[in-house]
Image 1 (cartoon, rainbow, N blue to C red):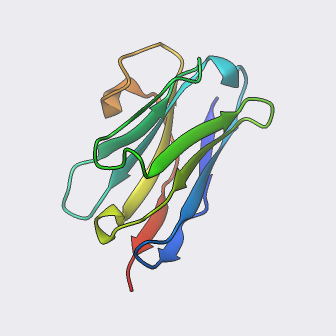
Image 2 (cartoon, rainbow, N blue to C red):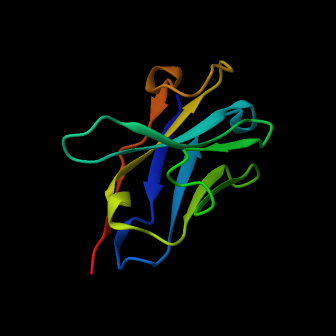
Length: 123
């Protein structure tokens, strides 16, 4: 059974940075595609970034150039480095995982989810 635990959220001023981590417990981490989603109050969950098992990354237009996702297969951790944060980045951020090589752009493409980490960007 796969479990995902996010950490690293918090309060940051506009223009600041945070790094989220997603610790993966279970076997065969290297074959999983990983996604980062976020959900703000009253809004739908949206894809922020995804990192394929191959290491290829894709980003939402709203975060391109500011966010970077990476992974450490040995430690079984996925990271989301968030720079130049804006108030509109405020949301709960979720890590997701799936082994089935799905499209990866929809929440239903991921079988496993973390509990979420709150990110608040405010002065």
